Image (cartoon, rainbow, N blue to C red; front, top):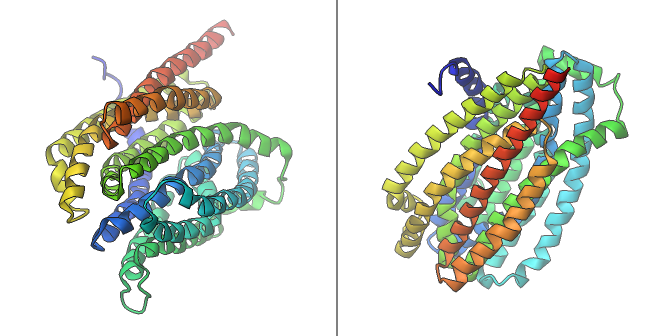
Length: 452
């Protein structure tokens, strides 16, 4: 049978993936809570405002976290070989890179503020969008420091500590959301902008918690001691950027495509944009599970790659594919059956609910295809094969998703649904391209071993 011999791979992959999934779902649940709380302010404008701000800020922020993600496969490879000195050197250089990257993110986010008025959006949403964007700008530094620490811990195979810190930060974020959006207790009533303020505070607290872990825990304190023996070098920074920058660009392109999707939908009005913000939450929540299994696959593949255990590496990826396919199919069935009820949890506006329920049907197919390509991409990152996926993403979203979105959305009159069709088409092409690339790299590695 096709699943024979995979039991241990399922267990190990889930042990690594579940803490990442919990932390990612918790992190994304904050955005869902934002949407619910802002959606119940009573009209579409506040929800459309934060949707527009998300659309502009998240591609830029993912550009930063993508650079930090280059640390995981490099640390995973050195950790598998028992090279703590190299792991400490990579971590120290990654922290400096993240600080520098946060400055770039702040400049990019700041540049968005004056441009918001020239993107064809409803003028009523602009003050809310600018206020939220300001807090995203302020939180760039703690976000990048958090990303480096998180990717280091994942590289050494410890995903549970990251989960604990993320849960604490997310619970704080949710509590502050209510306090700052509605003005509970002693807090000021900030409306939709309060969601951005709570995110900033939570990110600062999460960095403090990571710093405490590094100084208190014996295992990680040893890495800090090694910081004195390793230096900031161009070689290490260049190595981190060689892996991290293509990952960042691939994430940026994907998030930019999603953001363009939201901006284009905004052209159809505030109601479709608010409906899209609701509909995109469910596939995005599913993507957090994809991210967890993708991270587990990166860890397993990078460690097996470091030890040259190539058949084990392939089975680890296949195990993740089995798991993610089972999850996304089940989740899609639930969304298909209860889409209208789900949309009703976010808002009381009937017109918004109607459009969101319709868009969620496209989200079902989106989730299944996205899960498949996400896991294979995680395996490629474990091999530090990151440049070609970046080129594939650029090609696909520009030459496949773009034309399909224009034809479906405007020529065929599908409106907001046309942009969803475009994104699904792009993900389908990427799944095929990533799968072919992994098989090619695997055959090369096995062939080289056989020749040796």
